[in-house]
Image 1 (cartoon, rainbow, N blue to C red):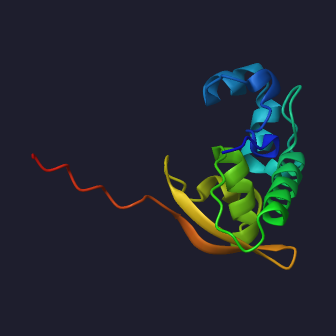
Image 2: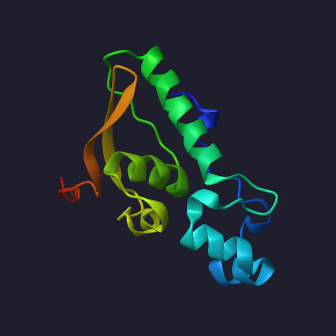
Image 3: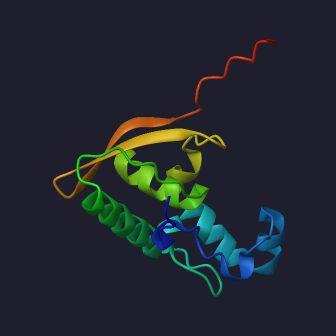
Length: 134
């Protein structure tokens, strides 16, 4: 297992650790732009979503290059995952907030000829069978 710094979460800047209502109270315009026109948004003292998407795609490319033809698990956070999924699913603008992405879900992608392809949309793994008494 290795840590891939390109897959870290969005730098929320001054919104870090805040709930939506708290972020809206701190900077109503930045919060509105993030929710309604996310690709134009820059979080106060934080990252743009364009920068996050670029960083995540570069990291996925590095992983694919290091492990050609192999299955690799990459784990990230909600916003980076939404950005990549929105690109792969053709979802634009604020629609990225509507992508179903349950906590603990798994999506499958494949890197082919310098391009990422969606294999499976996010879904929860099947429930595990309860352990039987021995």
